Image (cartoon, rainbow, N blue to C red; front, side, top):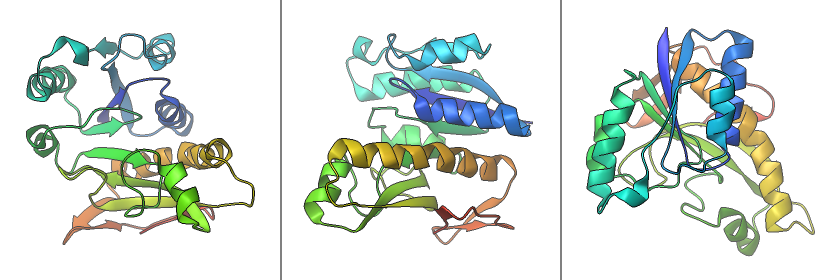
Length: 211
């Protein structure tokens, strides 16, 4: 039974998707805690309503990224995590923090990495004139929005798309993609070889492509 700790900063819709899938599909894992850097994060109420322990490590209370990351790491490690899941956690993490969880921390990014790292990905996609957009689940490394790719979901960019319509279509795929990727980790079906992720015995849905 693996322990999963999920980090959020706001609504936590991807956290909700992971929690629902873990419970509905009977994963060999438990959501050990949901932790936020913001006390007003709406996702905390969802977790509490399902009996999941929650905690807040308020980033505004710390004078440096290093001090915040040290306090956050202490709180996470109280729950003995096998996996840390970043679900809309809006903080740039220090190299030391990332190294502490190397190979056991996942993030989801709303683009087909390596395209459009950073913020405003949907705007970047529209301005870039691409025909395809999507989301990527990857292992976290010290370089922002890089790291070995676990899986991607693709959506077409349609004529007349706005940032909002494109974002909504991508988010719907994220809610399927992230639970899928987390379950692969939980079931010990991921390995990193020479910087690339290998999926053992993959069973991929039509809407999901592995990289």
